[in-house]
Image (tube, rainbow, N blue to C red):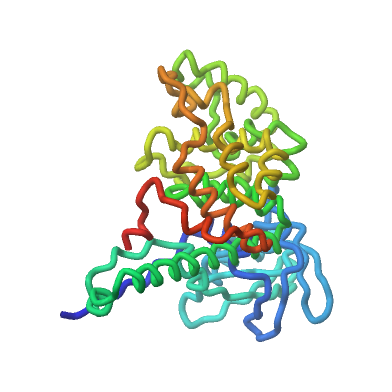
Length: 385
């Protein structure tokens, strides 16, 4: 019988997803221009709130010098021309154009409205392997079934432990890249947002954390900005909202409408979110409320991450509370009769597995056997595969 391939060729991920992975440092920070010269990203900058390139305040080391400017990411090389960037003065300060595929035989050069050529980098999205695109199809019996059938319990246990160690190393490497790109606390914040969005909404949660960095949220009311940039807030006079939810929605709206023009370019499109397929307790609205609670208790959360063991972090996560989100599934819904924990056991385990233990490994604080003793509360695609 012919064995089916475990991995299939994946379509190119969305531009938003690729931008999020670039900014997270998942592609690394050292690249080669299409002309062959090496470059290095010194600083990834910030998401641009104004018209123009995707990222501003970027620093790039090229030919022994550090240049400051903006970076534009496109799916294809020709998008620079087809999107009108060449004639738009807002793109004149671009110092790097990153794209992910060439379409056709013709070469497209990136130039500004003053006819300055912008260096180009062609990235292969397959660098990210399992991190982007569609999940791998479920495995089917193949050539490895025979050898595994003959393994004893001890050898099978060794194989499973080796697989777990490999996954932990990969998680730690990804977190290391984020820390290198944005610093330890910013990377922790992004990783927690990622864990709260898992699995249907990892990308939009990551984008939110990137577009609303920790440093900016410390100086403002976090929840209205999170829900506003997520695209979840609309004028309450126009929406059908349960009477019991109007007070909280109104409170968010009153703070958001003052800021929305400033953040208009960063608001996520509705199609970025997947609202179905998750338990009501894990609705994106509710998970965003949990992120707001984490931010309100940020010093306590970070202190728990600095502990050798995970017991303190588990306690802190279990004690997170929110007067609205412990009794509501969505922004517009009527309250439920019995209050629910803001972060349940399954989500806490995800945070331990995907953030705490990889960080402990990176920083030499790993407790032997602690990661292996975690038990998944729910099944997942990787486990089934």
